[in-house]
Length: 97
Ligand SMILES: [Zn+2]
Image (tube, rainbow, N blue to C red; front, side):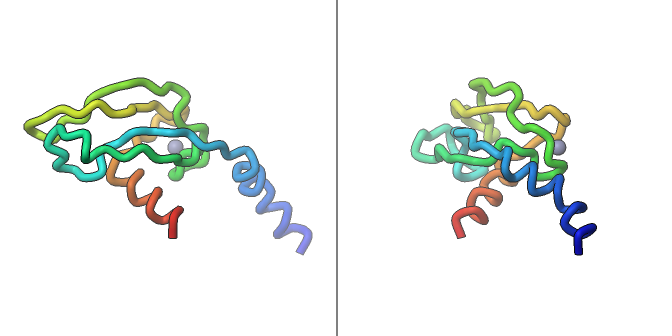
């Protein structure tokens, strides 16, 4: 019992250290360059793949859907994992349910 709690310690620590970061991303993959297809959301600043710090560098960038560009938030993670906007949308919708 005591061991099980100790094993979970790191995870609990990570969650308690979690902060939110606000990002603007495309709502859909084919956004047509339209601001209507932007969503501004709060997500965790912890990498969902490994628990490292996410968004150590946050900057303005472009999403290109094949025909049009859209001004969006881009970020880098400490661990080098890349968050796709599709993954981030899924993460966000899961958080809301
Ligand atoms: Zn990671």
